[in-house]
Image 1 (tube, rainbow, N blue to C red):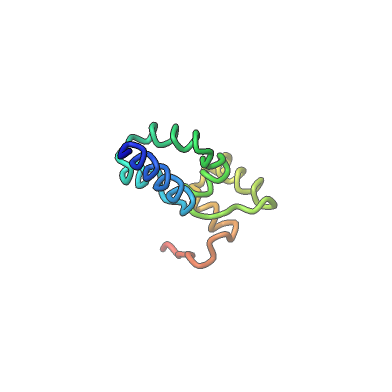
Image 2: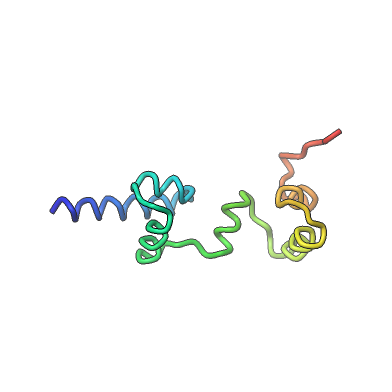
Length: 100
């Protein structure tokens, strides 16, 4: 009976973590397992992030469809970092910083 309660609590922590967009390392620490084990369990529960959602989560901002081509061009050909591309494209207006 206790094992089942632990499994239910583990599932709830994982589902809540994914729903709240918590970093996977934090969710794994709460559950007390490895990242690989967490990903397998999340996959079985059907709550994994799509590659696009995962990329947006890592970047910390959303790239609109109309600017996605320009963003990729800057990343690949211009060899800018993600934040620099976002500043150039005007995606991070509140975080403009002037380097002198």
